[in-house]
Structures are given as structure tokens and as C-alpha cells.
Amino acid sequence: MEQYIIFRLNNQRYAIDIGSIDRIIDFTEPKKIPETYDYVLGVIKYDEKILPIVDLTKKLYGIYISNNSKSKVIVTTWKDRMLGFLVEDIEGIQRYGSNQIEKNYEQYEISKKYIEGFIKLEDDIIIILNIQELFDYEQEEDLIDIEGKLSEINDENEE
Image (tube, rainbow, N blue to C red):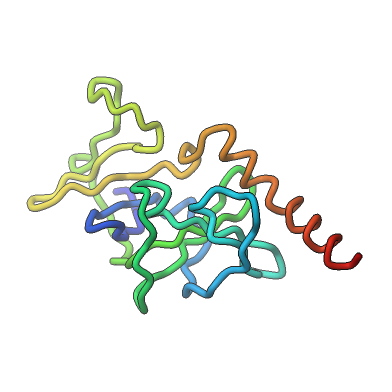
């Protein structure tokens, strides 16, 4: 049995392996960072560190999340860093047997590396995301460079 956190984006259910999740927190308005991709909402302070917040709906669908009281941030470990993903709603943690999980192999011709597979339910299909493959090289560099952009802003404010 594999365990996943199930959440909603744009009326679709998604799953992330529970092993890559640090915590789920309430959404607080992040501090905006200039010259980043539009799906990067900004940063918040988390455990005395800077946590970039990515609007997962904007990243995958090109539309901003409709922020409401159910919106949460899934804090994950990504490329040896902490990264927060804003999602519309968390449904909970579920276990699924291997007979319910279908991995994304080349036979499906799904070119998106971040789709790890599918959870087949009687009345629905849940898309399993591989958050390590969510960004291309340039996008990864932008996220990794956020701390550098913050120090530039602080340097300018001190002058």
C-alpha cells in the first residue's frame, strides 16, 4: 500500500507521495519577488527560513488559484530545498494498493515528466505528481535563485 496526500486543482484530483511532504500549512500572503515566473507568488518565513510559494494551478493550467478558506500550502522537499505549493483544497491522506496505481510508462505517450502515474478509482482518476520533475532547467534556476534576489532587494533597501 502506498500513501498519498490528495488535493484539488482546477476541479481535478491530484496526489503527491506522502514521503516528500514536510507539512501542510494555512496560506498566508507571501512577500512578492520581482523578476520571477508568474506562478511564483513570493516567499514566506517558515521554520526561520525562506519558503518560496508556487501556485500549482497557475503552473499546471495557466490560471491563478481561486484563493479561499480551504486553500492550503503543501510544504515539500524539492531539490534539497523546501518549497511550498499552494493548492485549492486538501482532501486528505489515502492509501492505495498496487492494483489501483498505474505508473506513467512510455506506452501512454504522456510527455509530461511530472506525471508519475494514475490512481484508478471506481468513479475517478487521480493524477500522481512527481514534484521533482515539475520544472524545466530555467525554472529550477529561477527558484533556486530566489534567495539571491531577496538579498539584492535587501541591499537596495539599505542604500
